[in-house]
Length: 99
Image (cartoon, rainbow, N blue to C red):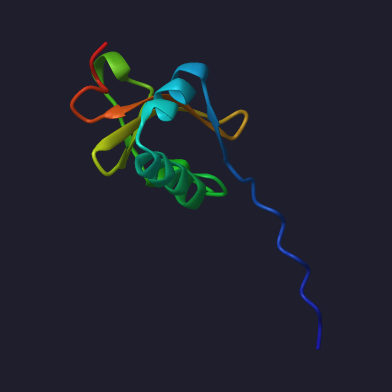
């Protein structure tokens, strides 16, 4: 029986936080923090396409993506050149789109 050659490793995405998002995450309840980190770890990190989980934003946030975790939203920039999903804002759905 002929051995098949191993599949080429597909590129894997990673998740990074900018300073603002890291501060916003720290302010949240511990359970909410865990839910957000679990979501990112299970769905985004290691994914072959982070766009299948979120939705593109429009108007003044065009070019950014939104991920929904319960009542919280993660506003992210998908950086194809580095295979990074950069979390730039985290907040309750009522407040996250206001600036």
